[in-house]
Length: 215
Image 1 (cartoon, rainbow, N blue to C red):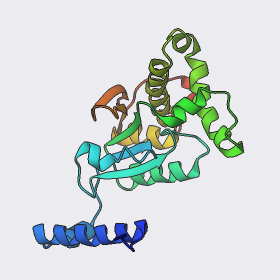
Image 2: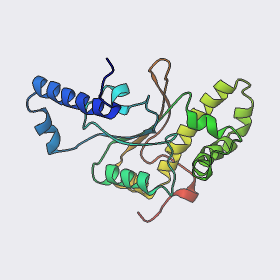
Image 3: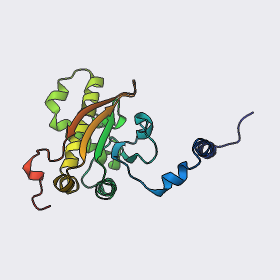
Image 4: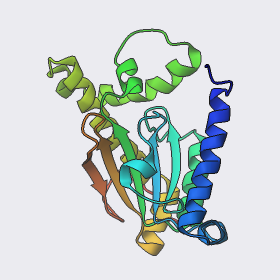
């Protein structure tokens, strides 16, 4: 007999079952969780449904503050992303900001093509094309397209971490509080393992064009 429940109704039922299980395991779980949010980490990840930050790091609710978008980009005109960054760094006082991409990323692969995906996606993917342009000689020298795409994933993560370091939000926290540490990671869909590919310590050197001298 076919179930009369819709897919979203099943989600609601699963939520109730999960909540009941949590209370059974720890009666004070939700009371404690609702009181305060003190994560050490801001996670800037891809919107891909196969890369949930809490699952792949085996963390609990309240431990990671999360922002996700297509191909885990740090775009200087993205008010959504910067409001999350500002809140995480200046109010939650996170100690680490992680940009986590993943191998076989659809957004990265799309950026490598010359296909027209429509005005909005074209505009977004151009940010990844700009990364390709920076490393064109290295990338073009990789004959296997899959390996080339995965290398672009790594380089894209690196550039997004550098974009974070260019912001006054990060530079001010570095100057006055010696935090946060910036990390660039790539998650493997085939093995579930995170590969650290780049990091920047507080106060790391960068192009002086992007540094602020009056923070």
